[in-house]
Length: 483
Image (cartoon, rainbow, N blue to C red; front, top):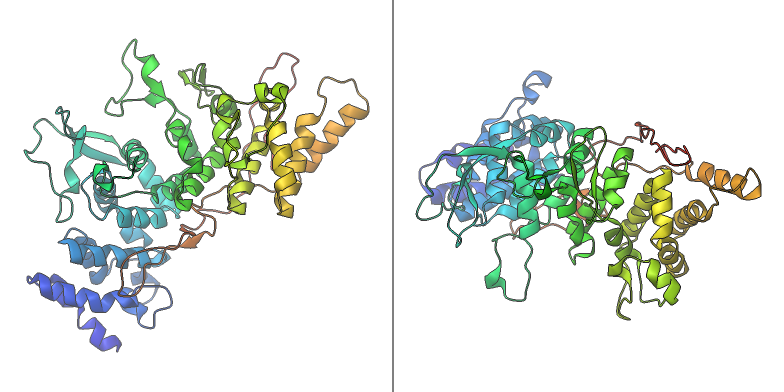
């Protein structure tokens, strides 16, 4: 059977699109992991040739630019094959990643969801992450108010038509990650009418991409570095500081989105950023305050992440008026229909993020003053998973400890609570969804992925970076350590 399948490979380059389609349709079922003849997609001959690009992989990359049916199957094939370390180098080639990023950000790209799945799988490797974090794409700004604000020049292909008329002006290079963030935020349907969608795709799997990128220090730095709200500006001009924003703030509203992939990836990204101790003040501060992340002195409105961390943990419980006043405005007087996050792994992730934010004195004080205890106390009563309950108990011990008490029983109790919390291992979350399985779009049927799809972890590493010392009023200092 291998011989017959290999004979189909040259037909992927045939001039007749029907021939290309037939050849690809017979090869596609062999791309999922575990397929009996999957070896035909890998170069034989040992380690010397294993890392080289095979003819069939090169053909599949080119077919992603073909007409709809062919490009659809080509994307599906690469999504399925992208779990192999032998193909990562070829699929992470900068020119191909530029095409993928450009294709995703163009609103008219029909298969942008499949491209997002592919990028999610690729960024599960550190090599692809480093390339994506520094990747630039070429765009042409569009002045007309009836069309998007730019056109990605390298997105043009059979399933991503160029705008008519073609925009005038000189192309300029812009950070790909800024454009992907904007596409992710604007790709959500805001009503029941699908005809009013701004984009052809939902782009939920970009949340997995952000989660993978934020595992790396450079990724966290990106999300916690103020950038122009108008991403077409390369850097703020004099007097334009008020237009800066933290990139992390753009994805926060999706912690309660109906799609598990989207809200799971966002929760993972927030948690990864919470590993960066100097960024805690920016993460928690309201957007009415301007704050910087040391060692940078550039300030921007606070990210105000706390309401988005607490809403998934909140239920329909009613609180006393005194306790209600402590809560962020978004959590006051929630309706009786309010439900908690149904996925236990995402609930655990939010509690772990709160634990990480407790590892500076300023963070603990802020959480105490904003009603976190009241929310997690009610969540603990309703929680049915032992591991989450244990994490909530450690969180409560940190929040209720008396930090100003003299050396005595209460001070010792706080020290014991901190020591107990430090015994918990919180790992970087590089998953865009709870189950953490590789996306496999197999078979001959339509493309798709399970609700628990995503990308595997970039790395299983513990927290290595200690929190930098902060000067507090009482000279008290805590560090983010492995908790």
